[in-house]
Amino acid sequence: METSSIITMVIALGILWGGLVVAILHLRKNPDTSDPE
Image 1 (spheres, rainbow, N blue to C red):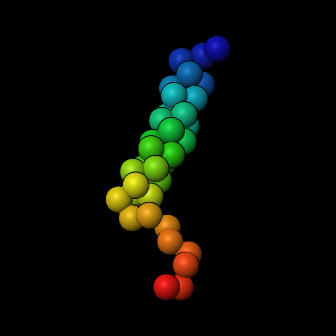
Image 2 (cartoon, helix red, strand yellow; image 1 turned 90 degrees about the vertical axis):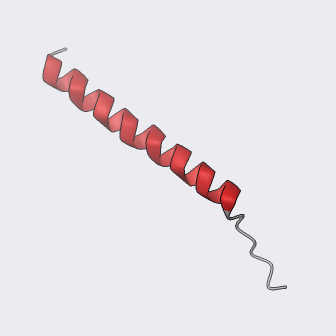
């Protein structure tokens, strides 16, 4: 693999896992309550 492809893969994985972590932290702070009450 070339250096550029490795860098691209690392950036893509970082965005994926970073978004997942941010979503989990957001849901922990603001639980998604779909109950109307």
